[in-house]
Image (cartoon, rainbow, N blue to C red; front, side, top):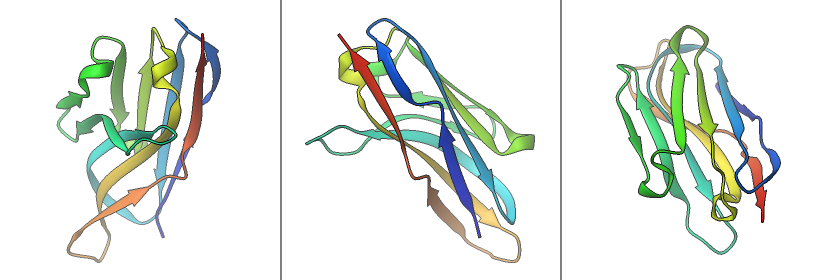
Amino acid sequence: QVQLVESGGGLVQSGGSLRLSCAASGSIFSISVMGWHRQAPGKERELVALITSGGSTNYADSVKGRFTISRDNAKNTVYLQMNSLKPGDTAVYYCNAALRLRYYSGDLDYWGQGTQVTVSS
């Protein structure tokens, strides 16, 4: 019923920039938190950034000052502007949303399929 679709990944040189987008669709009542996680080969999934409905943000230490998360609540869309990319940023980036559906009382977590970001040196 809910779908999160990421876009904007790709191949970029070290020092370059990418902007990821994630649009949530379906019978959504509200989205409390949207965020981005990433998983590199052989590594555990880690939180990159999140943003609440009120605009509060949190970032992983490794991306502070380089990445900016934002959201458009009217469009149920979250963005991740990634600047000064490093090879260590190479990973599959997953969009995540904690949301409430229409006609359902509880909070639910949804994940996108992921988009590959590759940073070459």
